[in-house]
Image (cartoon, rainbow, N blue to C red; front, top):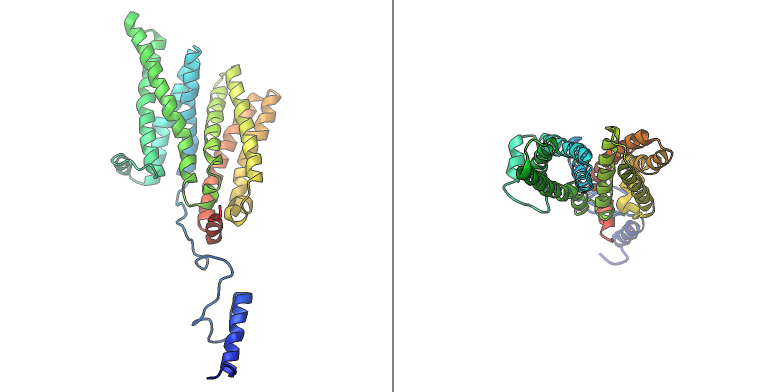
Length: 329
């Protein structure tokens, strides 16, 4: 076969067409050569394993944030001698963090003993393992702290024993506040440390958003329960302002195909709707004195945004082009 033969000429034409157009049409060429992909990927197959979380995990993020930051508010209330506020905040922390959150985790796992199995080994890169350990440590501080605080508030024991209860309550509430901060923010840190492009590229924003949403939600619940004090109103203003800033940050910080799940898909709209509700909407309502409506708006926005981030992770992890595009960042 010479270089000027029809076969050689046809082969050269096919090469040029393949590199220019990315596809080689015609009989007999699709099996042997196959189409040359224009874009990197496994022919549309996921490169990384997308999350398989169901509805329990966004709820866990939501209630975990409320529980953790309620303990932080309880610590501040105890320091400034707002005993009634501290008691209610610790009740919220205990119910949301020790009752509701473990139930949601166990429901996601499917079997109760799997939750206990996660406590046998500490895996700092496993969101579920970290969640189980932080939740356990939080509960170990929150429940005894609540009991000690209630006994001290009821003045059931006189003298030195009451002082001991007061000291124990203070130490335990401090521990609950520390682990509560981790409980409210660790999920943002850990999903940002994964290979899911939409999460990884916003790894700085996520823990700030989760922590702020938890703080604002805890204050909102307390306000809806009737605690209308300037400190909680300030927390509401602060959280809504931070969420507004994060909404602007998310709108500006784009990475093309790498995080297009946020900016081009419906799941991304859930994030933005949530940020609008707990950012500018809550801020305006609070500014004009509609505190209950502002609290409801913030709670709704915090919950919707959690659903949005989980949904975005599923879409982004299933998009091979996003995964390869994220390697440039």
